[in-house]
Image 1 (cartoon, rainbow, N blue to C red):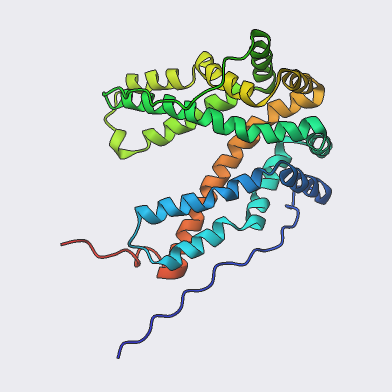
Image 2: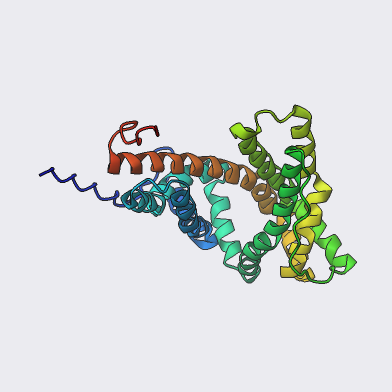
Length: 289
């Protein structure tokens, strides 16, 4: 009679978050309050289920306990806050954090937060079509443009101009360009693209980061969810001293958070596998004959 395999250890319990050593407790508390007010961490946690489902589909040989463990790690709000707080603290002083909380709790700030997620969703489809076309050209077989969903009528010229001014003041384009560059870096790291000639990458980057192309994506998205008076009020905010500092800091915050989250996810996956299947690489299945 064979011995039963030991039960895998339970996933780690969330630990309380203390202020990082180099961040004052009041500053850390304000940052956590800002994160809660904007719902930014909640949006990240909402992506856990589809992410784990995709990973499970890609690696069906791993036992269910791995995915349970990984999901618990990825949903560990306290662990994520411990990583996120120092990033915010490096770029936003406590006074600005508290002013931002006050802004996002104002009627304009609340409507801005409500609109931001819808704007992201509306623009994501157009950005996805652009990426599909660019990567199709990288592969040497340009892809046909994916059909777009029904769109609203074009905004009035004054509305469109106000949106372009808001995009400029809030520095949306540089942030979008950085996102596209990270997408290209991920594609370059794929072994399947190692034979892609350098000039093809140059063309793809030029297309995916072209400011006019990105504005053409963002203007209709903003117009669908933000009326012209609110667009102008938000532009005034971003042209204020506080708004200008926020517009400069947030793209850096988002870039660092992306790197932190990616590293945390990779570490969580390795630890989940090790908890359930033992130290690497012993858990790997034997090679096929």
